[in-house]
Amino acid sequence: MTNKNASPLLVYLAFAIVYIVWGSTYFFIQKALAGFPPFILGTIRFIIAGTLLMTWCRLKGEKIFDWKNIKYAAVSGILMLGAGNGMVIWVEQFIPSGLVAIMAASAAIWFVILDKSKWKENLSSKSTIAGLIIGFTGVILLFSEQVILALNTQQSNNQILGMVLVALAPVAWAGGSLYSKYHTAPDSSVSVNTAWQMLAASIIFIPGSFISDEYSKFHFSSVPADAWFSIIYLIIFGSIIAFSAYVWLLKVRPATQVSTYAYVNPVVALLLSICFTSEKVSWIQILGLVVILCSVLLINLVKYRKDKIPAGSTVL
Image (cartoon, rainbow, N blue to C red; front, side, top):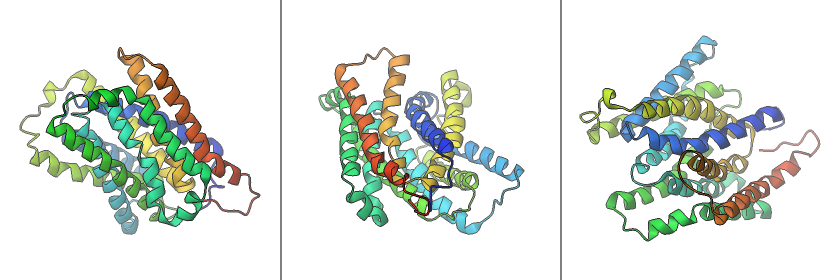
Protein backbone atom coordinates (compact mmCIF):
# COMPACT_ATOMS: atom_id res chain seq x y z
CA MET A 1 0.00 0.00 0.00
CA THR A 2 1.31 3.46 -0.83
CA ASN A 3 0.95 6.45 1.42
CA LYS A 4 1.46 8.93 -1.42
CA ASN A 5 -2.31 8.96 -2.11
CA ALA A 6 -3.15 10.19 1.37
CA SER A 7 -3.46 13.94 1.89
CA PRO A 8 -0.68 15.12 4.27
CA LEU A 9 -3.19 17.46 5.92
CA LEU A 10 -5.57 14.57 6.63
CA VAL A 11 -2.68 12.46 7.95
CA TYR A 12 -1.63 15.23 10.37
CA LEU A 13 -5.24 15.75 11.45
CA ALA A 14 -5.76 12.02 12.03
CA PHE A 15 -2.57 11.81 14.11
CA ALA A 16 -3.67 14.83 16.17
CA ILE A 17 -7.04 13.21 16.84
CA VAL A 18 -5.51 9.86 17.85
CA TYR A 19 -2.84 11.53 19.99
CA ILE A 20 -5.13 13.91 21.86
CA VAL A 21 -8.51 12.17 22.00
CA TRP A 22 -7.17 8.73 22.92
CA GLY A 23 -4.97 10.26 25.57
CA SER A 24 -8.11 11.68 27.16
CA THR A 25 -10.01 8.37 27.10
CA TYR A 26 -8.03 6.98 30.06
CA PHE A 27 -9.39 9.87 32.12
CA PHE A 28 -12.97 9.50 30.87
CA ILE A 29 -13.04 5.70 31.22
CA GLN A 30 -12.25 6.07 34.91
CA LYS A 31 -14.98 8.70 35.28
CA ALA A 32 -17.50 6.51 33.41
CA LEU A 33 -16.70 3.57 35.71
CA ALA A 34 -18.12 5.62 38.58
CA GLY A 35 -21.57 4.85 37.16
CA PHE A 36 -21.20 1.91 34.78
CA PRO A 37 -19.81 -1.59 35.47
CA PRO A 38 -16.92 -2.38 33.08
CA PHE A 39 -18.61 -4.93 30.79
CA ILE A 40 -21.83 -2.93 30.55
CA LEU A 41 -19.74 0.15 29.80
CA GLY A 42 -17.98 -1.65 26.94
CA THR A 43 -21.24 -3.07 25.57
CA ILE A 44 -23.07 0.28 25.59
CA ARG A 45 -20.11 2.22 24.24
CA PHE A 46 -19.36 0.02 21.25
CA ILE A 47 -22.87 -1.10 20.31
CA ILE A 48 -24.09 2.51 20.15
CA ALA A 49 -20.96 3.79 18.38
CA GLY A 50 -21.02 0.89 15.89
CA THR A 51 -24.75 1.29 15.20
CA LEU A 52 -24.49 5.05 14.68
CA LEU A 53 -21.52 4.68 12.33
CA MET A 54 -23.15 1.83 10.40
CA THR A 55 -26.35 3.86 10.00
CA TRP A 56 -24.32 6.77 8.64
CA CYS A 57 -22.59 4.46 6.16
CA ARG A 58 -25.95 3.08 5.06
CA LEU A 59 -27.37 6.56 4.50
CA LYS A 60 -24.34 7.39 2.34
CA GLY A 61 -25.06 4.31 0.21
CA GLU A 62 -21.90 2.39 1.13
CA LYS A 63 -21.75 -1.38 0.76
CA ILE A 64 -22.43 -2.82 4.20
CA PHE A 65 -22.36 -6.57 3.68
CA ASP A 66 -19.03 -7.74 2.31
CA TRP A 67 -18.69 -11.02 4.18
CA LYS A 68 -14.94 -11.32 3.65
CA ASN A 69 -14.28 -7.88 5.12
CA ILE A 70 -16.83 -8.50 7.91
CA LYS A 71 -14.84 -11.56 8.96
CA TYR A 72 -11.59 -9.60 8.96
CA ALA A 73 -13.20 -6.68 10.83
CA ALA A 74 -14.68 -9.01 13.44
CA VAL A 75 -11.31 -10.63 14.20
CA SER A 76 -9.45 -7.31 14.47
CA GLY A 77 -12.30 -5.70 16.43
CA ILE A 78 -12.40 -8.52 18.97
CA LEU A 79 -8.63 -8.35 19.44
CA MET A 80 -8.35 -4.56 19.63
CA LEU A 81 -11.57 -3.44 21.28
CA GLY A 82 -12.88 -6.60 22.90
CA ALA A 83 -9.62 -7.91 24.36
CA GLY A 84 -7.23 -4.92 24.31
CA ASN A 85 -9.59 -2.12 25.29
CA GLY A 86 -11.77 -4.46 27.36
CA MET A 87 -8.87 -5.34 29.64
CA VAL A 88 -8.01 -1.65 30.02
CA ILE A 89 -11.60 -0.83 31.04
CA TRP A 90 -11.74 -3.64 33.61
CA VAL A 91 -8.31 -2.82 35.03
CA GLU A 92 -9.10 0.87 35.57
CA GLN A 93 -11.47 -0.21 38.37
CA PHE A 94 -8.43 -1.04 40.50
CA ILE A 95 -5.41 0.73 39.01
CA PRO A 96 -4.96 4.50 38.41
CA SER A 97 -5.25 5.53 34.77
CA GLY A 98 -1.66 6.84 34.81
CA LEU A 99 -0.25 3.40 35.58
CA VAL A 100 -2.49 1.84 32.94
CA ALA A 101 -1.14 4.35 30.41
CA ILE A 102 2.42 3.26 31.21
CA MET A 103 1.70 -0.39 30.42
CA ALA A 104 -0.35 0.52 27.34
CA ALA A 105 2.66 2.42 25.98
CA SER A 106 4.39 -0.92 25.40
CA ALA A 107 2.08 -1.35 22.39
CA ALA A 108 4.62 0.61 20.32
CA ILE A 109 7.20 -2.09 21.02
CA TRP A 110 4.76 -4.91 20.27
CA PHE A 111 4.05 -3.37 16.86
CA VAL A 112 7.71 -3.97 15.96
CA ILE A 113 7.87 -7.44 17.53
CA LEU A 114 4.66 -8.75 15.91
CA ASP A 115 5.06 -7.13 12.48
CA LYS A 116 7.11 -9.97 11.01
CA SER A 117 6.91 -8.72 7.44
CA LYS A 118 8.65 -5.51 8.51
CA TRP A 119 11.31 -6.98 10.77
CA LYS A 120 14.11 -6.32 8.30
CA GLU A 121 13.09 -2.71 7.77
CA ASN A 122 12.28 -1.84 11.39
CA LEU A 123 15.05 -3.75 13.11
CA SER A 124 17.67 -2.40 10.73
CA SER A 125 16.70 1.18 11.54
CA LYS A 126 18.77 2.43 14.46
CA SER A 127 16.60 5.51 14.87
CA THR A 128 13.42 3.40 15.09
CA ILE A 129 14.85 1.05 17.71
CA ALA A 130 16.35 3.95 19.67
CA GLY A 131 13.06 5.82 19.50
CA LEU A 132 11.09 2.85 20.83
CA ILE A 133 13.44 2.35 23.77
CA ILE A 134 13.73 6.05 24.57
CA GLY A 135 9.96 6.52 24.29
CA PHE A 136 9.20 3.77 26.77
CA THR A 137 11.83 5.22 29.10
CA GLY A 138 10.13 8.60 28.81
CA VAL A 139 6.77 7.15 29.80
CA ILE A 140 8.35 5.53 32.86
CA LEU A 141 9.90 8.88 33.83
CA LEU A 142 6.55 10.57 33.32
CA PHE A 143 4.86 8.37 35.89
CA SER A 144 7.88 7.20 37.92
CA GLU A 145 6.57 8.72 41.14
CA GLN A 146 3.23 6.92 40.80
CA VAL A 147 5.05 3.67 39.97
CA ILE A 148 7.22 3.91 43.09
CA LEU A 149 4.15 4.62 45.23
CA ALA A 150 2.34 1.60 43.79
CA LEU A 151 5.34 -0.67 44.36
CA ASN A 152 5.65 0.47 47.97
CA THR A 153 1.96 -0.16 48.66
CA GLN A 154 0.52 -3.60 49.32
CA GLN A 155 -1.50 -4.67 46.30
CA SER A 156 -4.84 -6.54 46.38
CA ASN A 157 -5.46 -9.66 44.29
CA ASN A 158 -7.52 -7.60 41.85
CA GLN A 159 -4.67 -5.12 41.44
CA ILE A 160 -2.16 -7.92 40.81
CA LEU A 161 -4.50 -9.52 38.25
CA GLY A 162 -5.00 -6.07 36.74
CA MET A 163 -1.25 -5.64 36.26
CA VAL A 164 -1.11 -8.96 34.41
CA LEU A 165 -4.08 -8.08 32.20
CA VAL A 166 -2.84 -4.60 31.38
CA ALA A 167 0.48 -6.16 30.32
CA LEU A 168 -1.42 -8.42 27.90
CA ALA A 169 -3.75 -5.70 26.58
CA PRO A 170 -1.10 -3.99 24.36
CA VAL A 171 -0.24 -7.37 22.80
CA ALA A 172 -3.86 -7.95 21.81
CA TRP A 173 -4.19 -4.36 20.57
CA ALA A 174 -1.03 -4.47 18.44
CA GLY A 175 -1.93 -7.90 17.06
CA GLY A 176 -5.43 -6.76 16.12
CA SER A 177 -4.10 -3.56 14.56
CA LEU A 178 -1.62 -5.43 12.37
CA TYR A 179 -4.29 -7.97 11.40
CA SER A 180 -6.53 -5.07 10.36
CA LYS A 181 -3.70 -3.50 8.36
CA TYR A 182 -2.83 -6.61 6.37
CA HIS A 183 -6.26 -8.24 6.04
CA THR A 184 -8.37 -5.42 4.69
CA ALA A 185 -8.95 -4.67 1.00
CA PRO A 186 -7.23 -1.38 -0.01
CA ASP A 187 -10.46 -0.04 -1.49
CA SER A 188 -12.70 -1.08 1.41
CA SER A 189 -14.60 1.53 3.41
CA VAL A 190 -12.82 2.51 6.61
CA SER A 191 -16.11 3.60 8.18
CA VAL A 192 -17.88 0.31 7.42
CA ASN A 193 -14.93 -1.76 8.69
CA THR A 194 -14.73 0.35 11.84
CA ALA A 195 -18.46 -0.08 12.48
CA TRP A 196 -18.20 -3.88 12.18
CA GLN A 197 -15.17 -3.91 14.48
CA MET A 198 -17.09 -2.06 17.18
CA LEU A 199 -20.23 -4.20 16.80
CA ALA A 200 -18.16 -7.40 17.02
CA ALA A 201 -16.44 -6.08 20.16
CA SER A 202 -19.75 -5.14 21.79
CA ILE A 203 -20.95 -8.74 21.46
CA ILE A 204 -17.83 -9.98 23.28
CA PHE A 205 -18.62 -7.77 26.30
CA ILE A 206 -22.12 -9.21 26.77
CA PRO A 207 -21.14 -12.62 28.25
CA GLY A 208 -18.79 -10.89 30.68
CA SER A 209 -21.59 -8.72 32.03
CA PHE A 210 -23.75 -11.80 32.73
CA ILE A 211 -20.89 -13.82 34.23
CA SER A 212 -20.08 -10.91 36.53
CA ASP A 213 -23.78 -10.49 37.34
CA GLU A 214 -23.54 -6.79 36.53
CA TYR A 215 -27.17 -6.32 35.47
CA SER A 216 -28.57 -7.35 38.86
CA LYS A 217 -26.65 -4.53 40.54
CA PHE A 218 -26.89 -1.88 37.82
CA HIS A 219 -29.63 0.75 37.55
CA PHE A 220 -29.64 3.49 34.93
CA SER A 221 -31.34 5.88 37.36
CA SER A 222 -28.35 5.72 39.71
CA VAL A 223 -25.76 6.72 37.09
CA PRO A 224 -24.32 10.19 37.90
CA ALA A 225 -24.27 12.96 35.31
CA ASP A 226 -20.45 12.86 35.02
CA ALA A 227 -20.58 9.17 34.04
CA TRP A 228 -23.23 9.86 31.38
CA PHE A 229 -21.14 12.69 29.95
CA SER A 230 -18.05 10.46 29.97
CA ILE A 231 -19.69 7.58 28.11
CA ILE A 232 -21.11 9.99 25.52
CA TYR A 233 -17.61 11.40 25.04
CA LEU A 234 -16.18 7.88 24.69
CA ILE A 235 -18.83 6.94 22.12
CA ILE A 236 -18.54 10.02 19.90
CA PHE A 237 -14.92 11.09 20.25
CA GLY A 238 -13.12 8.00 21.53
CA SER A 239 -14.85 5.44 19.30
CA ILE A 240 -16.45 6.99 16.23
CA ILE A 241 -13.96 9.79 15.54
CA ALA A 242 -10.63 8.64 17.01
CA PHE A 243 -10.93 4.92 16.24
CA SER A 244 -11.98 5.68 12.65
CA ALA A 245 -8.94 7.96 12.30
CA TYR A 246 -6.74 5.21 13.73
CA VAL A 247 -8.01 2.50 11.35
CA TRP A 248 -7.52 4.87 8.42
CA LEU A 249 -3.97 5.70 9.51
CA LEU A 250 -3.14 1.99 9.59
CA LYS A 251 -4.07 1.84 5.90
CA VAL A 252 -1.94 4.78 4.79
CA ARG A 253 0.99 5.00 7.19
CA PRO A 254 3.60 2.55 8.57
CA ALA A 255 2.48 0.67 11.67
CA THR A 256 5.52 1.80 13.69
CA GLN A 257 4.70 5.42 12.94
CA VAL A 258 1.03 5.01 13.90
CA SER A 259 2.09 3.27 17.12
CA THR A 260 3.66 6.49 18.43
CA TYR A 261 0.19 7.35 19.77
CA ALA A 262 1.03 5.02 22.68
CA TYR A 263 3.81 7.37 23.80
CA VAL A 264 1.88 10.62 23.37
CA ASN A 265 -1.35 9.44 25.06
CA PRO A 266 0.21 9.40 28.57
CA VAL A 267 1.30 13.00 28.02
CA VAL A 268 -2.31 14.01 27.35
CA ALA A 269 -3.47 11.94 30.32
CA LEU A 270 -1.03 13.79 32.56
CA LEU A 271 -2.10 17.21 31.28
CA LEU A 272 -5.75 16.35 31.99
CA SER A 273 -4.83 15.32 35.52
CA ILE A 274 -3.03 18.63 36.02
CA CYS A 275 -5.99 20.64 34.70
CA PHE A 276 -8.82 18.80 36.47
CA THR A 277 -7.20 17.45 39.63
CA SER A 278 -4.82 18.78 42.28
CA GLU A 279 -1.83 16.95 40.76
CA LYS A 280 1.35 19.02 40.33
CA VAL A 281 4.08 18.75 37.70
CA SER A 282 7.56 17.75 38.82
CA TRP A 283 10.86 18.25 37.01
CA ILE A 284 11.15 14.52 36.34
CA GLN A 285 7.75 14.60 34.63
CA ILE A 286 8.84 17.51 32.45
CA LEU A 287 11.96 15.49 31.56
CA GLY A 288 9.70 12.57 30.65
CA LEU A 289 7.67 14.80 28.32
CA VAL A 290 10.81 15.96 26.52
CA VAL A 291 12.14 12.40 26.20
CA ILE A 292 8.83 11.20 24.72
CA LEU A 293 8.77 13.95 22.10
CA CYS A 294 12.35 13.09 21.11
CA SER A 295 11.41 9.40 20.77
CA VAL A 296 8.52 10.22 18.42
CA LEU A 297 10.91 12.24 16.25
CA LEU A 298 13.41 9.36 16.13
CA ILE A 299 10.78 6.74 15.25
CA ASN A 300 9.47 8.89 12.40
CA LEU A 301 12.86 10.12 11.16
CA VAL A 302 13.45 7.34 8.61
CA LYS A 303 9.85 7.47 7.39
CA TYR A 304 10.02 11.24 6.90
CA ARG A 305 13.20 10.82 4.83
CA LYS A 306 11.60 8.12 2.69
CA ASP A 307 8.63 10.38 2.01
CA LYS A 308 11.04 12.68 0.18
CA ILE A 309 12.02 9.93 -2.28
CA PRO A 310 10.86 10.79 -5.84
CA ALA A 311 7.47 9.58 -7.02
CA GLY A 312 7.32 5.96 -8.08
CA SER A 313 8.58 4.67 -4.75
CA THR A 314 6.20 2.91 -2.40
CA VAL A 315 6.37 3.09 1.35
CA LEU A 316 4.34 0.83 3.61
